[in-house]
Length: 186
Image 1 (cartoon, rainbow, N blue to C red):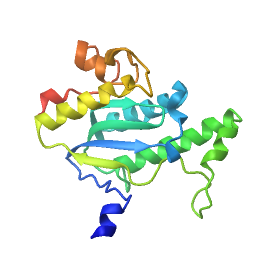
Image 2 (cartoon, helix red, strand yellow):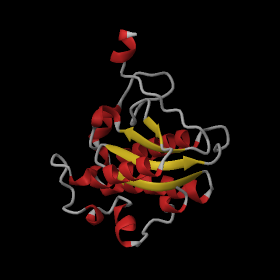
Image 3 (cartoon, rainbow, N blue to C red):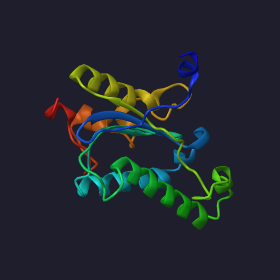
């Protein structure tokens, strides 16, 4: 029992149809996503999966070292889970961009593994089921205020931060085709 309390393993299982608060972190909390080009890879993946009806996204923020989403997976993406496809696609695109830029930062992500040379995402993203309106709004507030945290200070107001759903929830202006209003379903 004591060993379980000290374990760093998180359960990232998402059941199809459930709305979850999900956090994926760049390996070793590296600030790879500080550059907007890498944030756009995240946006492109969410847009693609949403257009294919694999996911519904109700809230998000892309931070320099991690991503928070409130989303629902609707179905598998062929043989993969939607979140597996998201992580795989974004990792491939990160690698491609780093190599194109001839960026030595790629060496930070080098791993000794049989199935890959680089690992961009930490294993076991956090997944918390959202089963009430109260939890949904608590998580939305958390992710929207994340860019304002002292150690980040990416914006002075949640709606000023471009890579977030805060502006949508504050003003109704939706700049992301994949973004849906959680108030419509909870």
